[in-house]
Image (cartoon, rainbow, N blue to C red):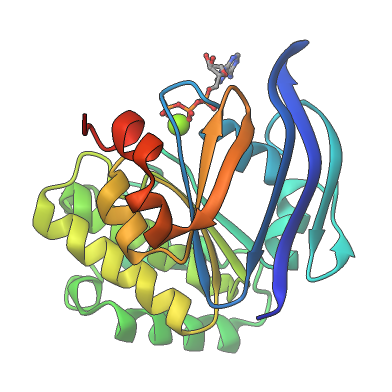
Length: 238
Ligand SMILES: Nc1ncnc2c1ncn2[C@@H]1O[C@H](COP(=O)(O)OP(=O)(O)OP(=O)(O)O)[C@@H](O)[C@H]1O
Ligand SMILES: [Mg+2]
Protein backbone atom coordinates (compact mmCIF):
# COMPACT_ATOMS: atom_id res chain seq x y z
CA UNK A 1 0.00 0.00 0.00
CA UNK A 2 1.41 3.39 -0.90
CA UNK A 3 1.48 6.13 1.68
CA UNK A 4 -0.77 9.05 0.73
CA UNK A 5 -0.57 11.22 3.83
CA UNK A 6 2.31 11.39 6.20
CA UNK A 7 2.45 13.70 9.21
CA UNK A 8 5.48 14.25 11.36
CA UNK A 9 5.74 16.15 14.64
CA UNK A 10 2.69 18.28 13.92
CA UNK A 11 2.01 20.83 16.61
CA UNK A 12 -0.67 23.50 16.40
CA UNK A 13 -2.89 25.63 18.53
CA UNK A 14 -5.08 28.66 18.69
CA UNK A 15 -3.65 32.02 19.68
CA UNK A 16 -0.61 30.60 21.42
CA UNK A 17 -2.55 27.82 23.15
CA UNK A 18 -1.03 24.44 22.34
CA UNK A 19 -3.61 21.89 21.21
CA UNK A 20 -1.74 19.45 18.97
CA UNK A 21 1.51 18.27 20.41
CA UNK A 22 3.74 16.30 18.05
CA UNK A 23 1.21 14.27 16.10
CA UNK A 24 2.66 11.40 14.02
CA UNK A 25 0.32 9.75 11.55
CA UNK A 26 0.30 8.13 8.13
CA UNK A 27 -2.56 6.99 5.89
CA UNK A 28 -2.20 4.77 2.83
CA UNK A 29 -4.20 4.42 -0.35
CA UNK A 30 -7.11 2.02 0.08
CA UNK A 31 -7.09 2.44 3.84
CA UNK A 32 -9.52 3.88 6.37
CA UNK A 33 -7.76 5.30 9.41
CA UNK A 34 -10.06 6.37 12.20
CA UNK A 35 -9.12 8.74 14.98
CA UNK A 36 -10.98 8.34 18.25
CA UNK A 37 -10.66 10.26 21.48
CA UNK A 38 -12.61 12.16 24.09
CA UNK A 39 -14.24 15.53 23.49
CA UNK A 40 -11.62 18.22 23.27
CA UNK A 41 -8.75 15.79 22.58
CA UNK A 42 -7.91 17.75 19.42
CA UNK A 43 -9.39 15.48 16.75
CA UNK A 44 -11.08 18.25 14.78
CA UNK A 45 -8.06 20.47 15.27
CA UNK A 46 -5.92 17.75 13.70
CA UNK A 47 -8.01 17.65 10.52
CA UNK A 48 -8.19 21.43 10.43
CA UNK A 49 -4.44 21.72 10.91
CA UNK A 50 -3.80 19.31 8.03
CA UNK A 51 -6.06 21.48 5.87
CA UNK A 52 -4.23 24.56 7.13
CA UNK A 53 -7.22 26.10 8.89
CA UNK A 54 -5.48 26.45 12.23
CA UNK A 55 -3.35 29.58 12.48
CA UNK A 56 -0.21 28.37 14.18
CA UNK A 57 1.73 25.18 13.58
CA UNK A 58 4.99 23.38 13.11
CA UNK A 59 5.88 19.97 11.76
CA UNK A 60 5.75 18.40 8.34
CA UNK A 61 2.92 17.19 6.14
CA UNK A 62 3.54 15.18 2.98
CA UNK A 63 1.08 14.14 0.34
CA UNK A 64 2.35 11.24 -1.78
CA UNK A 65 5.88 12.11 -0.73
CA UNK A 66 5.58 15.78 -1.60
CA UNK A 67 5.94 18.40 1.06
CA UNK A 68 2.63 20.30 1.33
CA UNK A 69 3.27 21.82 4.74
CA UNK A 70 1.61 25.22 5.15
CA UNK A 71 0.13 25.33 1.65
CA UNK A 72 -3.12 27.32 1.63
CA UNK A 73 -6.32 25.22 1.75
CA UNK A 74 -7.20 25.80 -1.93
CA UNK A 75 -3.81 24.50 -2.95
CA UNK A 76 -4.24 21.46 -0.71
CA UNK A 77 -7.61 20.83 -2.31
CA UNK A 78 -6.05 21.10 -5.75
CA UNK A 79 -3.26 18.77 -4.63
CA UNK A 80 -5.79 16.07 -3.71
CA UNK A 81 -6.93 16.58 -0.12
CA UNK A 82 -10.66 16.84 0.57
CA UNK A 83 -12.17 17.79 3.92
CA UNK A 84 -15.68 17.51 5.32
CA UNK A 85 -15.92 19.47 8.59
CA UNK A 86 -17.77 18.34 11.72
CA UNK A 87 -20.53 20.89 11.27
CA UNK A 88 -22.91 20.83 8.31
CA UNK A 89 -21.55 22.58 5.27
CA UNK A 90 -24.03 22.18 2.43
CA UNK A 91 -25.44 25.31 0.80
CA UNK A 92 -29.10 24.90 1.79
CA UNK A 93 -30.46 27.35 -0.80
CA UNK A 94 -28.65 25.76 -3.69
CA UNK A 95 -29.84 22.59 -5.37
CA UNK A 96 -28.07 19.29 -4.92
CA UNK A 97 -26.55 19.58 -8.36
CA UNK A 98 -25.39 23.16 -7.70
CA UNK A 99 -23.82 22.03 -4.42
CA UNK A 100 -21.89 19.36 -6.29
CA UNK A 101 -20.70 21.90 -8.83
CA UNK A 102 -19.55 24.19 -6.00
CA UNK A 103 -17.33 21.31 -4.90
CA UNK A 104 -15.71 21.53 -8.30
CA UNK A 105 -15.18 25.27 -8.46
CA UNK A 106 -11.49 24.54 -8.98
CA UNK A 107 -12.16 22.25 -11.92
CA UNK A 108 -11.74 24.74 -14.75
CA UNK A 109 -12.65 22.40 -17.58
CA UNK A 110 -16.48 22.63 -17.90
CA UNK A 111 -16.74 19.32 -19.75
CA UNK A 112 -14.70 17.54 -17.06
CA UNK A 113 -16.83 19.14 -14.34
CA UNK A 114 -20.01 17.88 -16.04
CA UNK A 115 -18.56 14.39 -16.33
CA UNK A 116 -17.42 14.31 -12.71
CA UNK A 117 -20.80 15.60 -11.49
CA UNK A 118 -22.54 12.94 -13.56
CA UNK A 119 -20.19 10.25 -12.25
CA UNK A 120 -20.77 11.26 -8.63
CA UNK A 121 -24.55 11.35 -9.10
CA UNK A 122 -24.38 7.78 -10.40
CA UNK A 123 -22.63 6.74 -7.20
CA UNK A 124 -25.34 8.35 -5.06
CA UNK A 125 -28.80 7.34 -6.30
CA UNK A 126 -30.42 9.15 -3.32
CA UNK A 127 -28.97 12.41 -4.60
CA UNK A 128 -29.38 11.71 -8.26
CA UNK A 129 -33.15 11.33 -8.18
CA UNK A 130 -33.44 14.65 -6.32
CA UNK A 131 -30.69 16.57 -8.07
CA UNK A 132 -32.78 19.69 -8.72
CA UNK A 133 -34.18 19.96 -5.18
CA UNK A 134 -32.74 22.38 -2.65
CA UNK A 135 -30.08 20.83 -0.45
CA UNK A 136 -31.79 22.35 2.60
CA UNK A 137 -34.70 19.97 2.01
CA UNK A 138 -32.52 16.89 2.51
CA UNK A 139 -32.44 14.99 5.80
CA UNK A 140 -29.31 15.28 7.97
CA UNK A 141 -27.99 11.99 6.67
CA UNK A 142 -28.67 12.90 3.08
CA UNK A 143 -26.86 16.21 3.60
CA UNK A 144 -23.88 14.25 4.95
CA UNK A 145 -23.97 12.13 1.80
CA UNK A 146 -24.03 15.29 -0.29
CA UNK A 147 -21.03 16.68 1.59
CA UNK A 148 -19.10 13.48 0.92
CA UNK A 149 -20.28 13.38 -2.69
CA UNK A 150 -19.19 16.97 -3.17
CA UNK A 151 -15.61 16.17 -2.18
CA UNK A 152 -15.40 13.57 -4.95
CA UNK A 153 -15.77 16.17 -7.70
CA UNK A 154 -12.11 17.08 -7.28
CA UNK A 155 -11.11 13.38 -7.42
CA UNK A 156 -9.12 13.58 -4.16
CA UNK A 157 -6.50 11.06 -3.04
CA UNK A 158 -7.18 11.73 0.62
CA UNK A 159 -10.62 12.33 2.11
CA UNK A 160 -10.83 13.67 5.66
CA UNK A 161 -14.18 13.27 7.38
CA UNK A 162 -14.91 14.83 10.77
CA UNK A 163 -17.60 12.79 12.51
CA UNK A 164 -19.56 11.83 9.41
CA UNK A 165 -22.12 9.92 11.50
CA UNK A 166 -22.86 12.63 14.06
CA UNK A 167 -26.56 13.11 14.73
CA UNK A 168 -27.68 10.49 12.21
CA UNK A 169 -30.24 7.73 12.65
CA UNK A 170 -28.68 4.23 12.71
CA UNK A 171 -29.82 3.42 9.18
CA UNK A 172 -28.18 6.56 7.82
CA UNK A 173 -25.03 5.84 9.83
CA UNK A 174 -24.81 2.50 8.03
CA UNK A 175 -25.39 4.20 4.68
CA UNK A 176 -22.68 6.79 5.32
CA UNK A 177 -20.22 4.15 6.55
CA UNK A 178 -20.82 1.93 3.55
CA UNK A 179 -20.14 4.94 1.32
CA UNK A 180 -16.86 5.45 3.19
CA UNK A 181 -15.98 1.78 2.63
CA UNK A 182 -16.72 2.17 -1.06
CA UNK A 183 -14.29 5.10 -1.26
CA UNK A 184 -11.64 2.97 0.40
CA UNK A 185 -12.33 0.16 -2.05
CA UNK A 186 -11.78 2.63 -4.89
CA UNK A 187 -8.30 3.19 -3.51
CA UNK A 188 -8.84 6.48 -1.70
CA UNK A 189 -7.10 7.14 1.58
CA UNK A 190 -9.68 8.02 4.24
CA UNK A 191 -8.87 9.79 7.49
CA UNK A 192 -11.95 9.85 9.66
CA UNK A 193 -12.73 11.17 13.12
CA UNK A 194 -15.56 9.34 14.89
CA UNK A 195 -17.37 9.16 18.23
CA UNK A 196 -19.33 6.15 17.03
CA UNK A 197 -16.27 4.17 18.03
CA UNK A 198 -17.32 0.56 17.69
CA UNK A 199 -19.02 0.95 14.32
CA UNK A 200 -16.29 3.19 12.94
CA UNK A 201 -13.50 0.84 13.99
CA UNK A 202 -15.40 -2.12 12.58
CA UNK A 203 -15.16 -0.65 9.06
CA UNK A 204 -11.65 0.76 9.52
CA UNK A 205 -8.25 -0.70 8.78
CA UNK A 206 -6.44 1.26 11.43
CA UNK A 207 -7.41 3.11 14.56
CA UNK A 208 -5.62 5.96 16.30
CA UNK A 209 -6.35 7.00 19.85
CA UNK A 210 -5.87 10.69 20.44
CA UNK A 211 -5.37 12.07 23.92
CA UNK A 212 -4.33 15.59 24.91
CA UNK A 213 -3.37 16.55 21.38
CA UNK A 214 -1.23 13.56 20.46
CA UNK A 215 -1.77 10.11 18.98
CA UNK A 216 -1.08 7.87 21.99
CA UNK A 217 -1.93 4.52 20.45
CA UNK A 218 -2.22 3.19 16.91
CA UNK A 219 -3.11 -0.31 15.87
CA UNK A 220 -5.14 -2.41 13.52
CA UNK A 221 -8.74 -1.35 14.06
CA UNK A 222 -9.88 -4.88 14.94
CA UNK A 223 -7.16 -5.14 17.59
CA UNK A 224 -8.14 -1.79 19.08
CA UNK A 225 -11.72 -2.96 19.54
CA UNK A 226 -10.33 -5.83 21.61
CA UNK A 227 -7.91 -3.64 23.55
CA UNK A 228 -8.95 -3.67 27.18
CA UNK A 229 -8.09 -0.02 27.77
CA UNK A 230 -9.83 1.19 24.62
CA UNK A 231 -12.88 -0.85 25.52
CA UNK A 232 -13.00 0.67 28.99
CA UNK A 233 -12.37 4.27 27.94
CA UNK A 234 -14.07 4.51 24.57
CA UNK A 235 -16.52 1.66 24.25
CA UNK A 236 -18.17 2.07 27.63
CA UNK A 237 -17.19 -1.41 28.88
CA UNK A 238 -16.08 -2.13 32.42
N1 LIG B 1 -11.36 28.13 17.17
C1 LIG B 1 -10.86 27.81 18.38
N2 LIG B 1 -10.27 28.74 19.16
C2 LIG B 1 -9.74 28.41 20.36
N3 LIG B 1 -9.76 27.16 20.88
C3 LIG B 1 -10.34 26.19 20.15
C4 LIG B 1 -10.91 26.45 18.87
N4 LIG B 1 -11.41 25.30 18.39
C5 LIG B 1 -11.15 24.36 19.32
N5 LIG B 1 -10.50 24.90 20.38
C6 LIG B 1 -10.04 24.16 21.57
O1 LIG B 1 -9.15 23.15 21.16
C7 LIG B 1 -9.32 21.96 21.92
C8 LIG B 1 -9.51 20.79 20.97
O2 LIG B 1 -10.74 20.99 20.26
P1 LIG B 1 -11.20 20.05 19.08
O3 LIG B 1 -12.39 20.66 18.48
O4 LIG B 1 -10.05 19.78 18.19
O5 LIG B 1 -11.54 18.71 19.86
P2 LIG B 1 -12.27 17.39 19.37
O6 LIG B 1 -11.39 16.27 19.79
O7 LIG B 1 -12.63 17.51 17.95
O8 LIG B 1 -13.57 17.39 20.29
P3 LIG B 1 -15.08 16.92 19.97
O9 LIG B 1 -15.07 15.43 20.15
O10 LIG B 1 -15.88 17.59 21.01
O11 LIG B 1 -15.43 17.35 18.58
C9 LIG B 1 -10.49 22.21 22.84
O12 LIG B 1 -9.98 22.53 24.11
C10 LIG B 1 -11.18 23.41 22.24
O13 LIG B 1 -11.79 24.20 23.22
MG1 LIG C 1 -14.39 17.53 16.95
